[in-house]
Length: 280
Ligand SMILES: C[S@@+](CC[C@H](N)C(=O)[O-])C[C@H]1O[C@@H](n2cnc3c(N)ncnc32)[C@H](O)[C@@H]1O
Image (cartoon, rainbow, N blue to C red; front, side, top):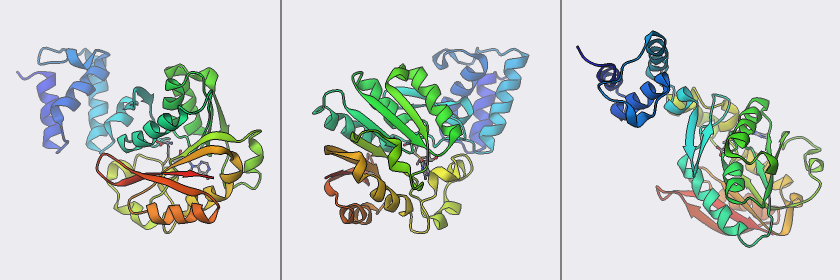
């Protein structure tokens, strides 16, 4: 008789899921509340655990990403809670975190503003590394902010952060902040609306539309952020923005029109221009 582990691998493999062995180990570990490293052919599940595993397998076969099924995703040095109310943190975004940390080393007790914080992965990673820093995370989604707040607690930076529900399209947006910031970071929605139906199902169906949709040309949020960011940035401060594929030139132009200068453009691990750094 084949084991739960072997059966799970076989179900995942037949459905064309990449890395079925690894995913089987993670799903069985989650169902049985064990370490993934302890899962093997001798792993035995009780009835409740078996039911939980079957539920998770059924979601995985509907293309729900593994992190959304188990409710957590590793990003930078931390593990973040994730739900379908937040964008799953992407490894590409770590470039922005690393650069923000490098730039923040010139500031004592830096202040960070994260526009579109989602799970909080950018801001909370920065605060986790800079215990002397303070930050504000903004999002228009109340449900996303609840996930970010749970992550602040999980990472141990609750005392350093404040979350604020607001849209940068609101007229009084700037008045929500008492002082300008040293570093402003943002990974806004940037997918052109017409490209969304062509995205992979695991993104299109399980990441929130409001975290993806950048309007007709993908640049709607950058145009608005270029209006609201300059008064919120200190003279000595930096802006770090994640951008979509082939958007660097257009986004730099939008911000240059608003009076900010492009310092540099950084590429992600695949060599794609992914992050722009701006200054006054
Ligand atoms: C691409 S996700 C980025 C999430 C997270 N910062 C990350 O890097 O994984 C963009 C986030 O911006 C938020 N958002 C979209 N439009 C907004 C608006 N007008 N005002 C405030 N937040 C907005 C979405 O709810 C979403 O959480």
